[in-house]
Amino acid sequence: MKFIDTAQIHVKAGNGGKGCVSFRREKYVPKGGPDGGDGGNGGNIIVRSSLRLFTLIDFRYVRQYHAKNGQHGKGKNMHGRNGDDRIIEVPAGTQIYDVETGEMLGDLIRHGEGLVIARGGKGGKGNARFVSSTHQVPLESEPGQPGEQRHIRLELKLLADVGLIGFPNVGKSSLIKRVSNAHPKIADYPFTTINPVLGIVRYKEDKSFVIADIPGLIQGAHKGKGLGDQFLKHIERTRLLVHMLDATRSNDPYNDFEVINNELKSYNPSLIKKEQLVVMNKIDIPVVRNRLMGYINSFMAHHTVIHPISCVTGEGVDKLMDEIANRLYQS
Image (cartoon, rainbow, N blue to C red):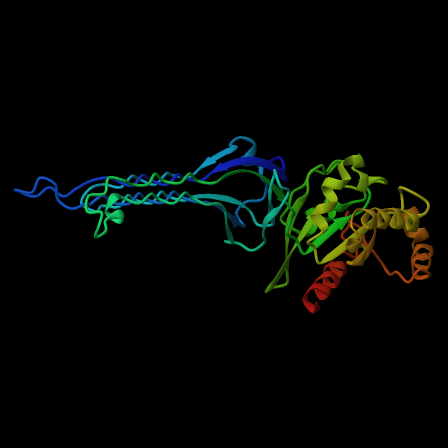
């Protein structure tokens, strides 16, 4: 399934129904008192978050959403029925913007949260509302008011406890596949992961957490290079970052570490303040194993601890999951 994290739609709330002009019909009375009922209110457009949805892909195919109009009023003081609301479900983590003003209308984080983004028009008054001591035979009524309409932009930011970050092809997909229920595509070339992937890690018996595999970042990502700006936004909500490194891609893993952190800082300075666990992958490869102590000392000189693992053999992975869980459940 393709991951879609932005969409634009047009919404139109229901119009209010017209008020009715009517008079009671009574025997021997040519024109009884007014009994025209009010029109019903138009339905609202409501956006509601759901944990059952993971992308905005449905909005690529349906871009117009209308709520029902209120029914017109009738005689015998019968009010028109209110129009049904239109409920639009979006993934939890969706932000809603007015396209014309740029205003954020809401940020739906929790399951079941709802937001009225277009209000239905109010129903018009029937002529029974206009009777008075000096105006016994009112012929006026009100039309229903039109429902609101607007262009809406939806932006999804993933809700995950942990964000996996790093250069392309350092083993993020392999790790998330090994420890969770996710099944990302894995291959030995860059940019295999082009869409964020969520995986649920079942930790021991009573705990779990969600990991987001963020597609590989490269230098210039914060400016949009390699679609990096589209990926970086998905780690803004995470509680913890796992920064994966691969010593086979360069002779200076600490420089790689700094490059990615500079991209985080350039995109959003608050990202660099998030807690990070630094992971050195591929320690099953002899050249990495031989240099591992040197890498550990190099990072320690910068007051940074690295966690050596192998996604192929599983070495160090359980210990890493323990450390992740400890950080999450202590915070």
